[in-house]
Image 1 (cartoon, rainbow, N blue to C red):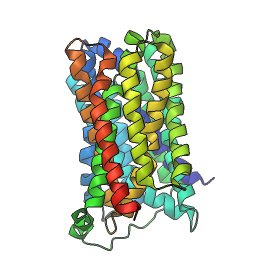
Image 2 (image 1 turned 135 degrees about the horizontal axis):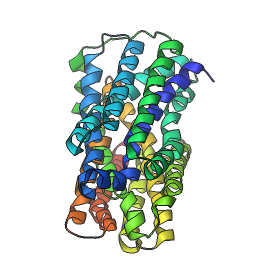
Image 3 (image 1 turned 135 degrees about the vertical axis):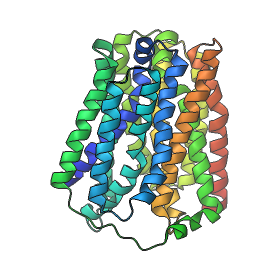
Image 4 (image 1 turned 180 degrees about the horizontal axis):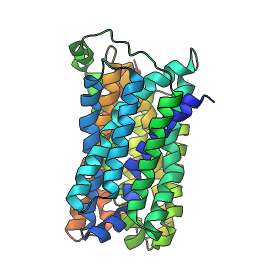
Length: 382
C-alpha cells in the first residue's frame, strides 16, 4: 500500500472523528457546559453548516493552487478548529469552533479523491480512493468509541486534542509523502454549473438531504436514547459506539457490492424505505435495550449504505461539473445532518422521551424513498 494514500486516509480519519464523535459525547458536553441536550445537538448542526459553507466556497477559491498545497492548508484548518474546540470556554465559542472544524470537510474529500485516483494509476483508481476513504470508516469503528471512552473517563476536551494531534500528523504526512500533483483546470467556473439545468442531479441532491435529515433526527441523540430510554450505563457507550461503527463499515461495503449488480437509484430507494421502518421501530420499542442496539446498527448501516449510490449517481448525472456535484452532495448530506439535529431536538425540548426524535425522521425517509424511486423509474428502468 502506498504511503501517500495512507497519508491521505489520515485526513479522512480526522474528518470522520470530528463529524461523528459528537453524538457519542453529547451528554458529557451538555453537563459540562450546563446546557440542555437539544442545545448540545446544535453543535452537530454547527459542524454540518461549516461543511455546507466550506465545500463549494473553498473548492471554487483554491482552483488556481496546486492540490498538495490545498490539502496542507485544509489539514491546518482541521488542526485549528479542533484545538480551539478543546479549549473553548463556553457553548457559543464551541459552536464557532465546530463551524471552523467543518469548513475543510467537503473540499478535502473533493481534492483528495482527485489525487488518490491519480496515485492509484490506470485501472486502480477506485481501489486508491477506497484506501483514502477508509480513514472515515476506521474513525467510526475505532476512533469514535475511543473518543466516548476518553470523555467518560477524563474529559470530552481530550478527544478534540486527540483529533487536533491527528490533524497535525496529517499535514506532516501530506507534506512528506504525497507527490505534487498538478491541478488541471479546463473549464470556466460558470460552465461547471450547467449540469444543474437537468432534473436528475436535483433528485439525487434532495434525496440525499432527506435521507440524512431523517436518520440524524434520531442519531444526533443516540447517547441519551441509549442511556435515558434504553437504560444502558454510560460505561457501556464505547462498546455500543463500536457496534454503530461496525454498521457503517458493513453498510458501505455491502452496498457497494449490491450496486454492482442492481440499479443504484432502486437500491437507494429501498434503503431509505427500510430506514423509515427502522425509525418507526425505535419510536415504538426504543425502551427495549436489545431491540435498540439492533436498530442502531441497522440505522448506521443504512446511513453509509447510501453513500456509494449517492456519490456515483451525482457524478454520472453531473457531466462537466463532477467536482462541484460531489461537493453539493456533501452539502446536502450535512445540511440534512444540521436540520435533523435541530428537528430531533424539538420533541425533547417539549418534554418527550429522546427516542420520540425518530418520529420527525420518518416522513423525511419516506420522501427520500419516493424521490429515488421516481429517479429509478425515469432514468434507470428505460
